[in-house]
Length: 105
Image (cartoon, rainbow, N blue to C red; front, side, top):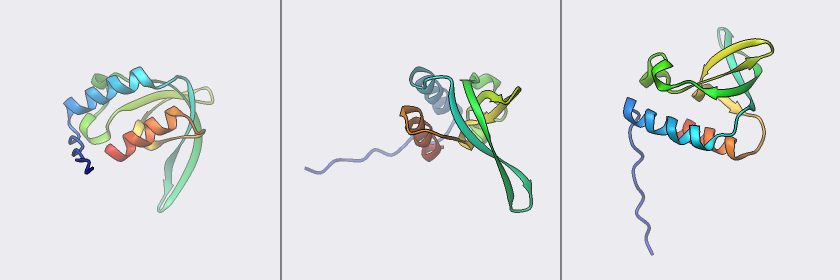
């Protein structure tokens, strides 16, 4: 039997809001992740964060360009990072959900 594949919807403010609702219902907070920061030409530094929540779409700067943001802690410092820039550290449902978001975004 041939399965018809459906095309993924384009990234837009509307689809990001729908994705936000889906992630808010399915992610388990808090979780450990890592992200990188450009520290020079062709140089990145990686650091660990504890993701505590998603920002509401209205709070995300340039939503269609950067996508959804998460908030968390890097040590004692509060951080807000685009969801597309984090990597979940442990194999889990969260890891798959974030990887799926990366592929779509």
